[in-house]
Amino acid sequence: MSNDSEGPLGQPVVVRIPVEPVEAAMEADALDAAVRHESLAVRGPLFGIATRCEEDGPRWRVAVPIIHGCPQQARDSLNSLLWFRAKDDAKDVAERRALLAAVSRLEREYVNELTVLGTRFRVVRAEEYAGMDARGNIELPRPTDPDPLDGGWEPGVSDPLDLDLVLDMDAPISPLQAAERLAMRSLAYTGSRFPADVRGDSARAVETHPDVLLLPASFIVVERSGKKNWRPGGSLHTTAHAARSALYNGLTWMEPRLLGLIPFDAPGNVDAYSVIAEGTSPVADRLAEFTGAADRLRAGRLNEVEAHGTTYRIVRSRRLLRWGPEGPEGPRPSDVNTQTPMVMHPPLDENGVIQPESE
Image (cartoon, rainbow, N blue to C red):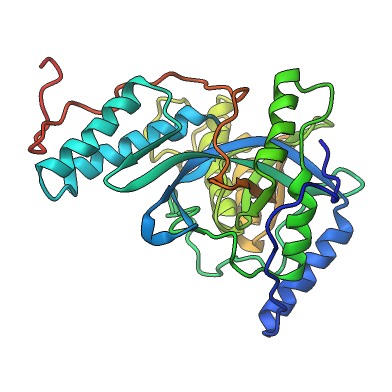
């Protein structure tokens, strides 16, 4: 990858000097992180859906979180969004027809942009990356990152990443955010390990979308066994605690199943704690290693634990959108779709009534 700070010229960046104590502390954290983490680990693209209405001016809004691994997954999410809007929220037959016409296209075509009822919907492409220090350690959550003390530990705790996020290139940002934004303008795939079409698309994107917009930090669990490289162990989360809670439940529910300590077809409420409590399991000692790690994680609100030779760590992930004269960048020709367009929901008539599949 290349991220020479002398990149292409884009629009001016509006800088706001932090004056409040919390803002000043966050800026100091960002400076410390920039000094400690000299290089970047780039994971690759993520996709979501952004919308724009005439009244929003140049601003866009996230409608589908920018977390999907391929463009078609984002399109499928848009398909569901519009189908449920037609079913539950359409004001009249004409509005429902417009929504269902868009759903029909999404069921058949690789659509990157469409307009429905005056709103533009676009598949948008973000680059995910993280700071890395000289020893290859990925950046941990910062002291001033959001981390609620009263967050829950139950499975499925609400974690609405990108909820109501406005994408505004003109919004004032702090000096360190401005420095990062300017430095990342020329980020491009350059190594020979990337296919030629990927490198070519990346170089063109620097010219066609010369600006970048930094999305709020997110958090993810990564894991490593032995001397292997770190690999993602889950999805992105809004806060470090949400990632920690997901890891807590993963250690006690999913990991025992992956190791065969609990059958995959066991009831959903069966976890390492409940099996140990029965007092008859021959694998109780092995399960106890997972519950012990989960207990340490929960009691100490830790960012790293180890169990059965695997180290689990909460790290800080960053994402950026490339931005051009027409707004955020969409999918590139070299981006791979892992699935094809498909029918996601049963037929719905113009009166909002679900029809039998056979019809």
